[in-house]
Length: 69
Image 1 (cartoon, rainbow, N blue to C red):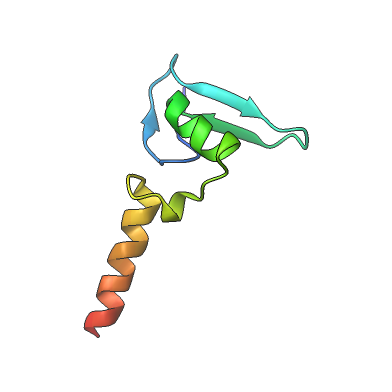
Image 2: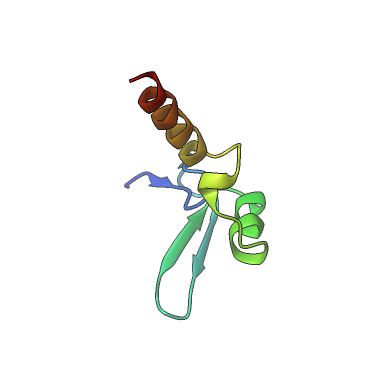
């Protein structure tokens, strides 16, 4: 079974856990917790602007490296 990652925070989801959300257009979103689901669906937050997500930290590291050059 393939390991899935959370559509919001980017963490790995263990088999048998998490939530699957299917949009009307057929796009499937996987979430590790209700916290991630609410932040993306109801609050319409962007992962790259939320400090506890992996995407935020990767962008922060890229900015740090580009400023050193």
